[in-house]
Image (cartoon, rainbow, N blue to C red; front, side, top):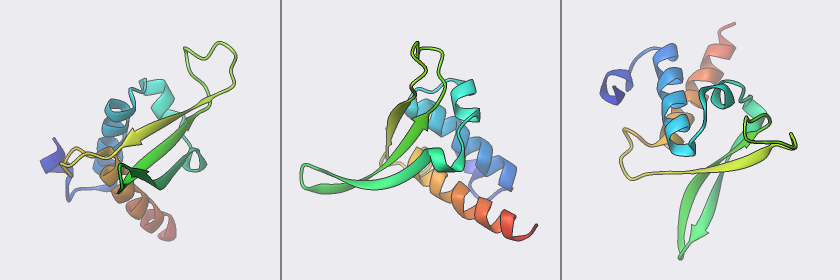
Length: 103
């Protein structure tokens, strides 16, 4: 699936990004689809002396959030770029910005 989407359309990249985010962050479909641009940010985190990119996702509304206060989920990068949620998010952000410029 990742091989087919690698150089494909905006919608394919968006969908693959969502799939890897749901898998990497253990997100439900409803949680992933309600994410807004400002709910996600990328930071480099030092883990055992190595800088690692981590994607932070603020989940405003969740089935398990009884007090509706929201929660932040950390989604780490993986070595295989084909299935890395951080890499797919960066690809999606690039394409999203370009698509927005065309409107």
